[in-house]
Image (cartoon, rainbow, N blue to C red; front, side, top):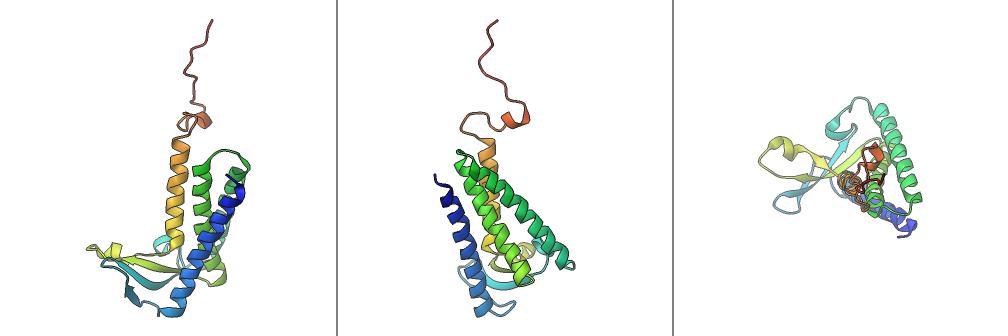
Length: 173
């Protein structure tokens, strides 16, 4: 598959998350909720930290860590695109890059990440967590890349790179 397809995938996913963030910023007040389904809510939350407000009192550190992490991920993504094989790995990295750069863009431009998807459930702690599409892209991409590395088409199941791969064919002496 063409490399441009994977780059286009990242751009479209990044754009979709940014469009949703812009919509939420323009149409909801901070803390306001709109019910989408019985369990899914649209709400506007600003997160200056990382996941679950980790390091929220250190927004500059979070911004630099985000830029650094997204840059490393993009480097790995670029190396992956240079290879001919690895559809699922490339697709997973495309999702991850879109999510990482969407949240990094927010941190650099807005000074916070806009989260807008919440879930209603019986556990209050879980109900209080708010996500954005970028978060889901990171999770889905990570899962796709992990599974791709564990179950390779050549049958090595991820052991070749760790030096554990041994040929199934016995050597003739």
